[in-house]
Amino acid sequence: MGLFNSNTVTRNGNIITIHSLQNNHSVNDFIRQMHGGYKKAGYEEFIIQFDNIPVCFPNAAVPIAGIIDFFRQQGVVIEGKSYKENLQAILTPYELPFHESELSRALGKIWKFQTSNDVYKIQTAIINELRRTDIFASGVLEGIEWSINEIMDNVLNHADTSCGFVMGQIHPNSKHVAFTIYDAGIGIYNSLKNSIHAPRSNADALTLCIKAGVTRDKKIGQGNGMHGLFSLIQEGNGRLVITSGRNAYQYINGHSAITNDVHLYPANQCLSTTIDFQLDYSQNISIDKVLTFNGKTFDFTNLYADNLENEKGELVFKIAELAEGTGTREAALRLKNEIINLMKTKSQIAVLDFVGISVVTSSFIDELVAKLLVELGLFQFNRYIKLANMSDLLQQTLQKSVIQRIIDEYK
Ligand SMILES: Nc1ncnc2c1ncn2[C@@H]1O[C@H](COP(=O)(O)OP(=O)(O)O)[C@@H](O)[C@H]1O
Ligand SMILES: [Mg+2]
Image (cartoon, rainbow, N blue to C red; front, side, top):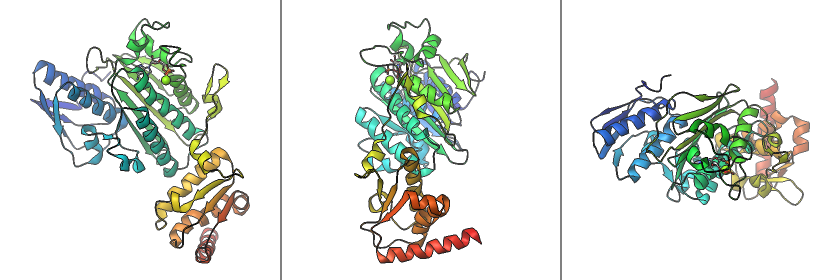
């Protein structure tokens, strides 16, 4: 296969040029050029530049960002600049607490994480952003939330390195999400080799780690994380590639295989681990089935939804707090996605609480309330949606936009 002779990254002296970030072939090419320049040619300073790069996928960008960080930790100086934000993040990933304000748009960014607090914040921000970007089929958001938390946590627990890297992307046109989590740590084989599971080879370790109950140490873990992700991908007919050491385990189109491509890793004791998955979010999945381990079902709690609940068990959406302004159609659409996604998971009554809001634009109210009424239909709307604390002015704006919307929809 193509991993040996693909030329997506080239080197001229100490200048490395990345030509494509379309898939993980670039990762191998990048490591090969770094090894060539550093170990063989003896350069200690590099400049990285980017060719015209039309697409930047996580399975190429995230590992390369992690590998750059790895070489910098070895004392290698790596510089470069791109005016494109997504490419610049390969050279300087987003980090907490420094980029706290960037959490409000967490997708499409490479995040470097070092602590469980980082993991919590990044994971929460990513899920919040997904929840607002589109409508997800049931179970999918919970599955993703659970999985990325487990996989990022694994870096902190098992990789024996100081940090990990993550990026999530959503592609609304094809209704799928793509995630990659990378660390330049010891790798799955090294982590499992002295455990009771005693993998015979690197490839063997990759097949083992996704089995239920496989953990390097029963005192530390339960061995559910990788298996839960794998079940999610199986259930949702997604795609999973685990690369660690020289092998990769792939689950694509319902088939599992260990690839014979020889992957490169940053250094001898750093076999590194890349978890790369994609999932169609328009297909319902059973989260109970995904999170059943050895007959026991893990009870997933949606903390975000729990926090919105009032004493009657209704989900209260305080528009003033949740909306990113009450002016634009986009702000309303994002809030509406959130409301629909949460109503799906909890099948509870939603209260749209306008307390503290005196004016909204008619496009905001049209997108948020009038369209919701048309989409749900009068009876469903009446049953599941309550409007609270609307001033007279808001009521009039809404009244007008509902009539207009109904005329538009039915003329
Ligand atoms: N990033 C990683 N680096 C090294 N080893 C890992 C990594 N992620 C997972 N592993 C290995 O795979 C095993 C299974 O992981 P998981 O299913 O999440 O179970 P647990 O974390 O409970 O042990 C881990 O115990 C560890 O040996
Ligand atoms: Mg785990």
